[in-house]
Amino acid sequence: MRLADVLKEEYIITDLKATEKRELLDEMVTDLSSKVEGLNREQLLEALLERERLGSTGIGYGVAIPHGKIKGLNGIKVSFGRSKKGVDFHAMDNMPVHLFFLIVAPENSTSVHLKILSSIARILRNEEFRGKLMKASTRRDIYRIIMEEDSKHHC
Image (cartoon, rainbow, N blue to C red):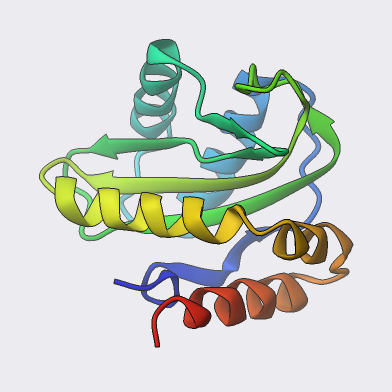
């Protein structure tokens, strides 16, 4: 499965306003749930907060991949958000997080969920890619940059 299958251009937030973890998750969940029919905002927020209690999904290098599973969702959805200021997300390297990929999966989708998670983590290791995401000025540019990088890994 490719990011192109689960991330839509309209699921991208170019300038997140939140300044702390819960507020950021709430901002991303509110945006995504307004665009995905049947996605329960409260249920998703709780699933993400529950996952964060196990340990931060801030993986370092200014990146976090919050993820959660919820009942009744038909297929995986991925959204992307960028915080120009950065958010204290309790990342592994204790640095502010600027780039967020939010993954929402149906309850019974473990293998596909893990494939998307590892594919996102893999492309985010590339420092040049992270820099391009930070510099991009529009939602369309961000989407194009993500799709180009993802296609390099799925030839």
